[in-house]
Amino acid sequence: MKRLLLATVALSLLAAPAAFAQPQDFHHRDHRPTHVVKKKVIVKKTRWQRGHRLPRGQHYVVVKDYGRYHLRRPPHGQHWVRVDNQYLLVGITSGIIGALVNAQ
Image (tube, rainbow, N blue to C red; front, side, top):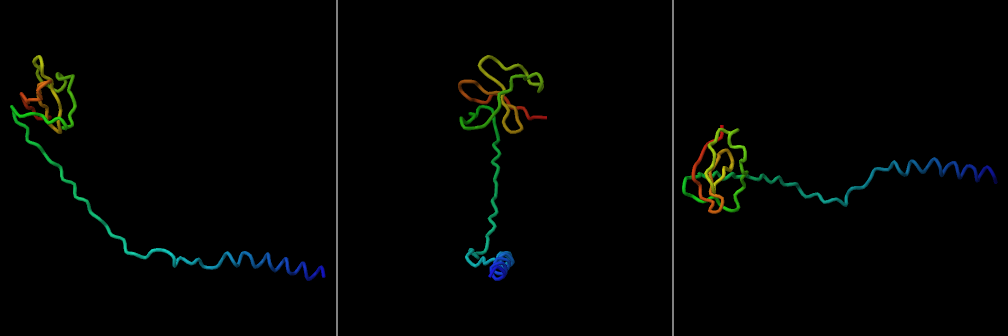
């Protein structure tokens, strides 16, 4: 009786790893083909001109150290801003462009 019980336990211990070694069934996965979407990025370059207004939504950086960039001192009520690769002398309250300088 002991031998039969011991043989049954040993056989069940040997059969357990074989059950885990069965190949897995992945038939439940979705087999739709994948699609690659190419996005096209369009960069809009704006041609700034004297007398035009700098739009409110335009991203710019105010240049405080104008001497470092070889820019003249701005008159009262104006400041230098950098937009893309240009320096613009813009009226603080009006946003009207007074001068343009290309960055070096």
